[in-house]
Amino acid sequence: MFSSIEELSEKLEAAKYVTDPVTLKVIYLAAQMQKPVLAEGPPGSGKTELAKVVAIAADTTIERLQCYEGINEEKAIGKFDESLQRLYLNTLGGTSRAEWASLRRDLHTLEFFQEGPLLRALLCEKPCVLLIDEIDKVGEAFEAELLEILSDWQISIPKIGTVKARSRPFVVLTSNEVRRIGDPLRRRSLYLRFEHPTIERETRILEKRTADSHAELHGQLAGFAHALRGYTLEKPPSIAEMVDLAEALKILRVREISAELRDVLLPLIAKTPNDRKRLLLRDGFESLVFDTQRYSRDFDGTEHGEDEQVCAERRRF
Image (cartoon, rainbow, N blue to C red):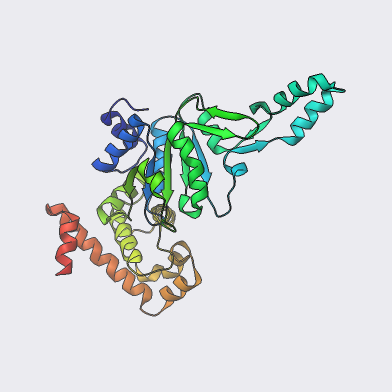
């Protein structure tokens, strides 16, 4: 997919993705070694976005399997199209007993099979990106079914047999840690740990994703996100939601986050009744604005040669 780390870095930069040297090397190694990437961390920390930007950088398609409790082989791999099989039989008319064995073989081929995302990924002529999203929502039995794909790059389908990959996809497995992923999948994967971004990194993300908004607002929004995520909300804001918030403030021509914006911002940041009630308390939103200003001021210290982590350590003492 990528001829060098430098090429990958340039293409991720063009895709407006803010990465770090470790993540960059892991993506490159996974592509070269044809290993899956297991991206694990809290919801909204950018795991799914990783698969999307790799697809953009590689100029390829993305096949997404959204996992959920109770997902089965039909949803993941596919199933026979019975209506198409029936139509085929009707067009042939009467069939002798001698022809029946041949006809059965014809009916049980990929021509009469509705492909699911796992099979589509293996049948791509050009390597695609296969995103297996929120794998922690399925059980160990489903995990075991994935091992054949990730080890041998093939799928065994009843009545068809073994279907080998035409190309090997770049695989991203994401987990929100609802359940611990089993060791067999972990052994076959390169591991990336995701956390919510630092103020510095989120500022850079907002700068890239909302370049035409007010520049002074990016640091404030990053500080605001940091304050919200430290406020013990039921649903802390994701990176994507902060990008949406930046877009909303640009539309409203707002240049500074203030307590007066509470009622406007609540629909964008409080997505559960309990979170909304908490932020509607007399000091709820005001304290968030105060923390936002404090974090933004502390982050400004990095402009004078200080690393943001150093600033954070200083605040602890």
